Image 1: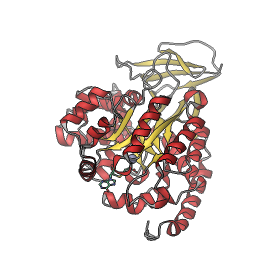
Image 2 (image 1 turned 45 degrees about the horizontal axis):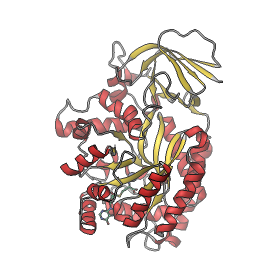
Image 3 (image 1 turned 90 degrees about the vertical axis):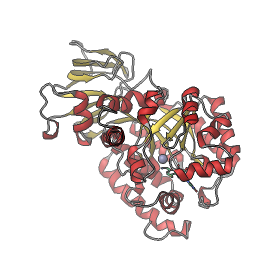
Image 4 (image 1 turned 90 degrees about the horizontal axis):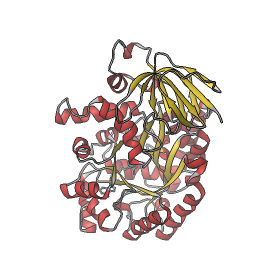
Length: 451
Ligand SMILES: N[C@@H](CCSC[C@H]1O[C@@H](n2cnc3c(=O)[nH]cnc32)[C@H](O)[C@@H]1O)C(=O)O
Ligand SMILES: [Zn+2]
């Protein structure tokens, strides 16, 4: 049984009590076995962490690894142009290799900046390649192929047959769900109501119940979407999802910017989970989700950066900052304080994923998903009696993360990734997007070379 002993860290535990304490943490067999005080024991590895901050790894509850290769290729566009002229054609041009490097590029960025768990929505095809990247990298992930079987504007290569979409999903589920002692999970990912038939959504509901697997979808991101759903399905978006039986504790809705009172009640009463993506919502001008209101209703809300082309980083520090500042602009400076935001980035995300007993805080019995921040820098000083939450949320950043572990396995040490060959991934990401852009005109004639 391998063990890691972390010595003299400032432990910001993110437990219910809000423990902040300087001391040692022992991880044995991938699990946190002791927290706090001085632990004098032998360990396979000892990390001297004096002056560093020990945190639970960040949990991001909405990512599109398959879109990391499209970073910077869909900026400053109207949302539907963003989606239909750029993202869908680009996704349609993916092959196994480009999916793999898109995922590796994204995971490299996520681990480098302290994210240890993700909820990831892939594209229609080649999802095996994303799972391979997830498996090799060591990140904790729930992932699934996107499902879309409806809509004239969906490019043909992405437009699925209903039965086939369900079958392909189950095939991936049977192959990947529960891999590596549950580090990898499958999740059903119908893209959003506007691109799914009712038959598909009901099929997803039945399979989710049969296999005990979660469902993740975009919902109520923009005004046009909810109007379209209301026109076509005769109900508001979340009300419709409830009507067809999808609203349950296993449903994770991302965005939820445009909810009415009845929909908020549905979410609360059915135990539906919510993901907030402030960077994406601001960049695509979707609106500002009513997060303080949702939290006030005891709805579980996690944070995510969405795909690289609508953010454009996958950095949780940036997302935390935006989550706080966006609400202050609207509701005054006292809402969304630093501790609340950090909770959303850790325990809040764990609750959204149903993993609150396993990750999200530093407590005995939880998995060794931990990060260390090295804050010995101008931007994080003075450190004298500094409020740790303020320091982490408002001052710290991407490059301060220096150690990352998942399941007690070191994935980054001294700012160097151990499971990902950075040089190779950067080079192959460039080659992959170059080849993908060459394929693009053949796949979707309508898309110009600028895409
Ligand atoms: N990041 C996400 C979604 C971006 S599209 C943003 C929103 O546009 C919505 N949408 C898609 N097609 C239409 C449409 O034809 N009219 C109005 N809204 C749409 C859709 O529901 C989604 O919430 C992704 O990569 O899939
Ligand atoms: Zn998204």
